[in-house]
Image (tube, rainbow, N blue to C red; front, side):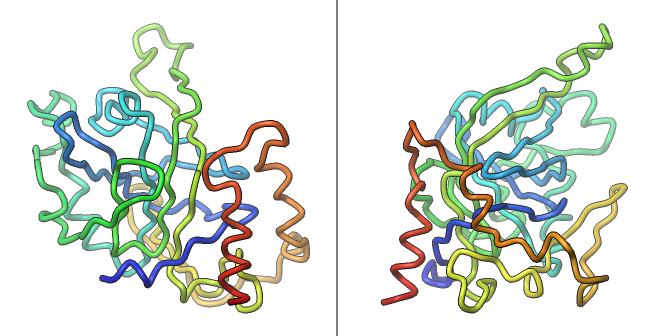
Length: 241
């Protein structure tokens, strides 16, 4: 798949809902790992990721400070299933062994996926995913501190989204930095099962009347410039070219 099919845009908000995420991270030997997860939520250009602390992906993210969040479409359920019971940790932990996980070194080959180079981070993007977000770690919080025997078993990692790549076909006509929600069809996980969105809106949203650009001030610092901060202007310039 050609990288020209993706365009760099800078949405003012990243309200994707609660999709499945394929997280790419860098292993100690420079290879990359892919892990599916769904404990993620966005606010502005921040995202919080929930992991079991023993898993390979959070270990990679904490060591390198980087990852890519790739969002599969609702046509990619088989791809996610090929990765769902695999782990990049060798040996496999007792907890994952009890859930029938197995170690897989090359998850790209396992799932039939292809890497694309990222702009700002080392982990590659997944070409087959219609949405790809390059991220940098901001802070880490240990969870379950109220349970002495469970404290630290799960962690929340806050990341900053540095750059967003989306398929050209997802862009809203006349709005270079907006995703058209009528075209975005994420793969949703609920209670361990995979679902897609049904066609069309349930009802028109009152919040949908608000111009998305009114949220941009919430996502960008006035005193600290970060990579990707000017991507909204890149998208506008490309649209005018």
